[in-house]
Structure formats: C-alpha cells, structure tokens
Length: 359
Image (cartoon, rainbow, N blue to C red):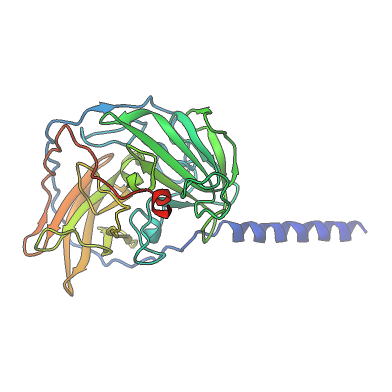
C-alpha cells in the first residue's frame, strides 16, 4: 500500500510538471539563424549630441535582481540628453522577458491593417506584473482598448493603466499592462516602481500567456503610443539599436525584416520596421522606424533586402547607449546623430480614439 501511494504521488508530480511546461509557452518561438564568421570591423565612435529637451525625471526605483543577464541600469538612465530610459521591466529581470520579432512595437502579425502598439513579453501564467515606475492607477478593469469599462469582449482583456509622477518634455506619461489573469489594484490607487499590480494571463485577444506593455504620451489613448524599447532601461553593459530606413524620396520603408548578427556569435536577432496605420509614432528625436533593445555591447552586422538586393553595414553597440543609423536608397548608410528637435515639439495631430471612431 505504501508503494502504491508513493507511485501515485510521483505520477501527480510528473503530470503537474508537464502542465506547467505547456502554460509557459511563448506566443511565438524564436527562429534562430546561423551567422558565419565575420571580418573585423572598425569601431564607430559616438558623436556628441546638441542641446537637450526639457525633462522632468522620475525618482529612481529599486533595481530588479537577475540570474540570467546583467542587472538593469538604475532608472532614470540617459547617457544622451535625448534618451529617456525611465521605466523598469514590468516582469522581474530574473526571467527571460523580452519580445520576439513578431511581437514588437509596430509589428503587423495579425494582418496588414492592424499594427501592434506595444511589446508582448512572454511569461508563465500567474507571473507577477510590476509597475514600471511610480504613479497613480487610472484604469483597472476590462475594456481599456475601446474605453468601455467592464467590456469582457475587449481585446486587451483585463488591463491596468498608470499615470506616472513624472513627464517627458512637460507632457504626461502613461504605461499600459494588458491580458492579465488577475488585477491587484484599483482605480486611483497610488503605486511605486516594482509594486505587483496584477498577474500574467491570457484574457482578451492572445495566443499565449504574456503581458502587453505600452508607453503613451501625452494622452492615455490608443493613438499616442511610442516604442517601449526606447523607454525601458537596458541591462548593464548592453545597448539599443535604432534605425531609420528610407527610399530615395525619404519615405520610411514599412515591414522590412532586418537581421542583426553579432560578430562572433551564432545567434542572429530579427526585427522589422514599423507598419503604418496612424497608430505608431516615432520618437521625436530619433524619428526611427525600428528599434531593437537588449543587445550585448559589441560589433554587429546589420543587413536587410532593399529592391531585391541585400545591403549591410557594421555597427558598434555601446554599453547603456543608443546606436543610431540611417539608410537611404542611393545614398547608403550614415551614423551621424539626428538633428536636435525643436523645444516646442508637440506630437502630430492623430486620428480619433477607437471609441470616437466607433461612434
């Protein structure tokens, strides 16, 4: 009898482990590429930047503990006067927690007319979701996408929105956390960076457990999102690649696949330029059409197909910094920093919110 009980207990544990493995499947698996060995490349020195924007910086939050990569830089972190790494990760940094290529900002994985306005960070169901910075909860319910409280058909599922205690260029900042299985805060509640505001789930339109994370300013509305990879502090010693790819008329190229290969590693990162339907916005300084975060410092080959030809260049990723380049048809690559934005910058006039459109 004792042996039977032990056998039954062991069987239950095995089944539970299998179930857990199924729950943590990411929305889409990484597709690795093998990069051949590359020649030595010259180091590209960073150039000084012009006068900065006006900033209202946040109070630094607690630094997450990690065991799979370096800890994050403390926020706020900005080597350049135009950078704004103000937020910590919404998922603890001791887990692999950054989006795959099809689930980044500006992606069009659900169709050519539906553009992704945030990043999807895969995590096991029930994983704590943390406030990226201090602020006040302004939404904690179903219905955020269409701004209809209690709407169980809303594609964002159970979601939280936080209005932060600091701004950017005198404009209000918000962060969004969607697809929760549980909400742990209420509207008007005060939260600090790192506070658990809910749990990862699959509510709304999802293909697996993850948190959909957005950065918005100056309004908490669908058409005022910006790429979160330019707002979340990178790991220490790692950096961010930002680019602007144009045709000969200076028009931004959409949905182009870009391969970023380390000089001495087999893994190749994949990112795509933004789709365009009025829902995506470029950073006011970089005016980019793609960004790729969490790159260990080093030399990388950047390549993509343009007019049926593969073009490429070598770039260096610097610790804690943004590496910026442009490519224009018939001109080629440049690494000069973009011109300084005007001090009175205001985001472009955007289409109405989904609620207004529905009316």
